[in-house]
Image (cartoon, rainbow, N blue to C red; front, side, top):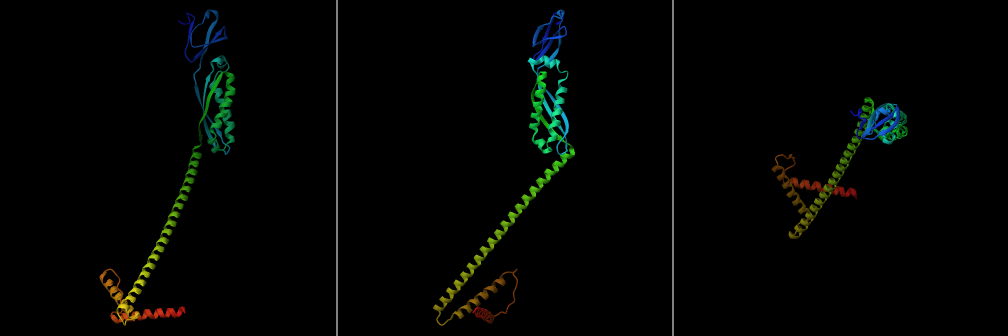
Amino acid sequence: MGNLLCCVKVDQSTVAIKERFGKFDEVLEPGCHCLPWCLGSQLSGHLTLRLQQLDVRCETKTKDNVFVNVVASVQYRALAEKANDAFYKLSNPRTQIQAYVFDVIRASVPKLDLDDAFEQKNDIAKAVEDELEKAMSAYGYEIVQTLIVDIEPDEHVKRAMNEINAAARMRVAANEKAEAEKIIQIKRAEGEAEAKYLSGVGIARQRQAIVDGLRDSVLGFSVNVPGTTAKDVLDMVLITQYFDTMKEIGATSKSSSVFIPHGPGAVRDIATQIRDGLLQASQHHE
């Protein structure tokens, strides 16, 4: 019906190419247009102005001889002011864009090691975008954005990379564990040294208190009991300690029994042995 009435409709975000006797005449904007076919005017086709996306998968090799699949995503659209160039100069813009993407990727990635390729994805995408912008602008297309969405090495390479990463992490974990055990051992040794030092200080104070108590006892006993000597007081103290020791041995069922000569006369023998040992030590130091 539209053709009979010489009217055509152009949808939104679309332009139509009008020809007259087979020659380009004008670009029709969205809306209703008169197309007098009887005067040689005809509609050659439509061109969308919407943003389009092309995903390109390119296989190439890195500098360290690893084959990878690089996936690039190109977003482009036709320019309304250059619609005639976009319609007539390119029969298949997607194939043309794909060829340029292949060319740039295969020229850029072989200059980089695999790790550098992952780190410089944005640089590769910028190189592809710049090259496409220069080439496609002459054909009436605008390159909106180019992304390198993925770099996929071979499955065996990925497994090897994961194993290297896991080994490095295990090495770090082992070092940290060894360092922690070292710190624990150092702290334990410091604690034992401090405990022994404090134990020695306690024993020294205990012995000092015993000596001070014995001295006070001997002096007090000599003053209160005329005619007694320090030797008599010490003998009495040894007898008291002897009976206390026997009492402790007999009171504890789990204690080990030590058989020594029993009787008050044995205390005198022990006291004599102690005095003789002290005298011999004094003579030795002199």
